[in-house]
Length: 285
Ligand SMILES: NC(=O)c1ccc[n+]([C@@H]2O[C@H](COP(=O)([O-])OP(=O)(O)OC[C@H]3O[C@@H](n4cnc5c(N)ncnc54)[C@H](OP(=O)(O)O)[C@@H]3O)[C@@H](O)[C@H]2O)c1
Image: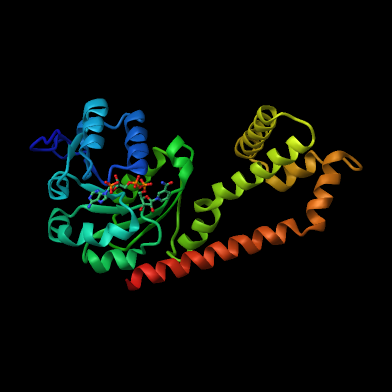
């Protein structure tokens, strides 16, 4: 364990970032920040798991501690990367220290609203984020919402942190976090389902499992890359590859017969409504 007594970052006008919870998401963010040139000496992680901490301090050279209070005494930006069910117990005892330090708190915990966070952390600048699982491979998508106490500089810090693992979008209305949850938060699973179904169908068409996986994987990657790199709308790209009377038109016609687009709309509406419900349940508990 590596507990230095002071942060050089604050002295040099930069800032230090502390992660409470050093699990999957924190590790991805730490790796992403180090890859973008953020100094290891300005990063802290706190977690009960000493093995995890030893790896982070040994391999990545960041400061680690099993005491969240120690982390708060060094961090200008605190990222809450623990499971939603433990977050209240984690932050309540840290409130005074965070407030006195005027630290920014960034929560990536699903379903915990900024209002709920500010109930546990009054007078603290809070940013709520909704990342998604592809952040674990540097291809994440994060929606961010800042409370009124958050300064422009703090917003820039939060954006820089989340951009270390993918793209970001700011929301000026927190209720839209539930829509982001329905689209990009749960979204990877929708694409996994589509890929799973295509793989199964490809095998039924006589292809081997290995070939089916490769065809589907590369097609999904290629289609997403075309949308990202051409700047064309998916609808236009679809039209571009749909020749009248051809194979693509035949397949798309069958999707349409089964109301594919309204099915997607209904699924996303369901996910959004469930996100609202879950936030209410967590907020009351
Ligand atoms: N993974 C994703 O793709 C994803 C996507 C969107 C949002 N999120 C959000 O990101 C957050 C973290 O998710 P994750 O997948 O990284 O979870 P994770 O791998 O379980 O990491 C959470 C870490 O927090 C530690 N922890 C538990 N209690 C603590 C305490 N009192 N003080 C400090 N650390 C403590 C846990 O240790 P123990 O294991 O020993 O309990 C664990 O190492 C969650 O709130 C989740 O909703 C994750």
